[in-house]
Structures are given as C-alpha cells and as structure tokens.
Amino acid sequence: MERYNSLSSYLKNRFGEKILKVSIDGGFTCPNRLNGNRGCIFCGEDGAGEFSGSRKLSITEQIDSQIKFLEHKSKSSKYMAYFQSFTNTFASPETLKSKYYEALNHPNILGISVATRPDCIDDNVLEILEEISKSHELWVELGFQSSKQSTVKLINRGYENHVFQRAVMSLHKKGIKTVAHIIFGLPNESHENWMDTVRFVNSLPVWGIKFHSLYIYKDSLIYDYYLNNRFKILQRDEYIDGVCDAIAILSKDIVIHRLTGDPDKKKLFLPKWPVDKIRVIGTINKKLKERNIFQGAKP
Ligand code: SF4
Image 1 (cartoon, rainbow, N blue to C red):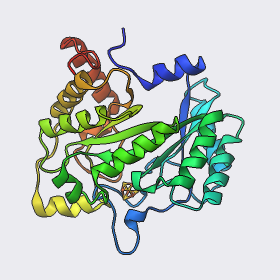
Image 2 (image 1 turned 45 degrees about the horizontal axis):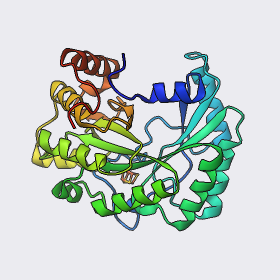
Image 3 (image 1 turned 120 degrees about the vertical axis):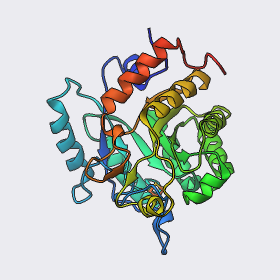
Image 4 (image 1 turned 90 degrees about the vertical axis):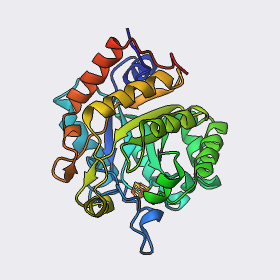
C-alpha cells in the first residue's frame, strides 16, 4: 500500500514500465550568477547539476553515455532527459528549441524535464514548452526552496514569492506540469516555517514536489556564511520528521519526485548524513508506517 503519490508509480501507470532519468548539462548559465552576482547561497559551482553529464559533450553524447552507465543497473529502455544544471530556459528561443529537440529526438527519450527559475518563463519560453507538452512528457522544475520572506533574502533567491505564483499559473494555463523544489534546514527556519512552505505549494496548481535537506557545499557561499554564523545544522531525525509531517499535509494529487537529495560526497562539508540516501528514504517510509501517515490525510 503506497502512503504517498510517488513519481515511480506515476511513471509506471503512465508508461507501463520503469522509466529512469538521465541528467544533462545543456551548457546554460544562470541570470542570478551574472554581473557579479554569485547566485543562491547554497548553489555550487556546477549550478546545482552535481551528477549531470559534461557540457563538453553534445546532448546526444551525454544521453548515450548515461544510458550506457544505467543499462547495467536497470532493464529500462526509456528515459526522461533532465536538463539539470543552471537555468535551462535562459537562452534564445532558437537555442532552447535546438537543445530540447536534440534530446527529444533521441530514440530512448520519451520526454524532458527542464529545471529553471520562475523569473525565466516568458511568452517565448511558454510557447516552446506548450508545443513540446502536446507531443511529449514534459515537466518544468522550479527552484522555490522556501516561502519565508527573510529566508528568500538571506539565500539570495533573487525573486519574490508572487513571481513563483505567476509562473506556476502561466504554465498551468498552458497545460504544463510544474515541480516545486523545496529545502528544509535553511538558516533560522523552524519546522513550522517548512510546513508554511508546503502549504504555499499546496495553494497553487503545482503537479510535483522535490524535498531536499540543506547541504553545505565547500564551493558555495553558504560555506563562508556558516563559518561566520554557525547556524544550527539539520539533524537526520529532524529532517525525517519534517518530511513525514509535510507528506501528511501535502495535497493528495501532488506527485512526490524526491524524499531527499543526493549530495556530491566530495564537495559536501556538513551535514554528512544525506549521503546515505537509501537509509534516509528507508527511515521515512518506516516512520510513515509507524505514524500511520498518508499523503494529504491532515490537510
Ligand atoms: S537559480 Fe539555480 S543555478 Fe541559479 S544560482 Fe540559484 S540554484 Fe544556482
């Protein structure tokens, strides 16, 4: 019995088989990291694309090499191409089309997932995405992280909550699925602040969600911030309780793409526990059972 609406179940129901993701570096940049701005304070040098392919390779080459690597792990033959690194709608319409369709024309790719910022969804982008969504599976992943005003400033997210609201509504009107990324454990945030962020997501026609814990990478601004401010580091049990409580209030129809993140061990300073992702997920599932929690049971 599934206690939450998981991405793997959605994909199985929709496509009748297991579908994996291959992560692409499409060679984009990020407007929050230009003109002397150093971006969101938790973001590493690779623009949140830890495990994506190399931008020195073409998109087709990245897909081929990742499929080769994953073939040993799974019998799956169909994949979603995840444009993960930096802001994947921040380029001219011609460039966007050429990159997206290079992925979509690969014989093993059935759709794309595009990670971006809500302030980088203009009419041209909407038009391209709408066209793709009519023929392929398409998700637009938006980094939201938190709804708390002081946190938004502190992490240098670079846009206000209403910009996220507007982007979700515009995408929804075009029939495009959105996935909200949120982070638990940001400096000076309480458990109640995390639940407020989940309620904010619930208030919008968001299709999916990814839960992450904060990690401090040595190549991110938050590393220096931590050394100077020594804020409280999130503990594994606190995170697990937070995710269980979030699932209890999360709208029933939102698809959960991630219960925890997947940090790069080599860059990680603190905390260390997210590296053992299997253990975190296993404990969340165990706790959900113990506490008899079902998604959306306590709205
Ligand atoms: S918007 Fe994304 S790529 Fe840009 S700084 Fe923030 S996390 Fe990094």
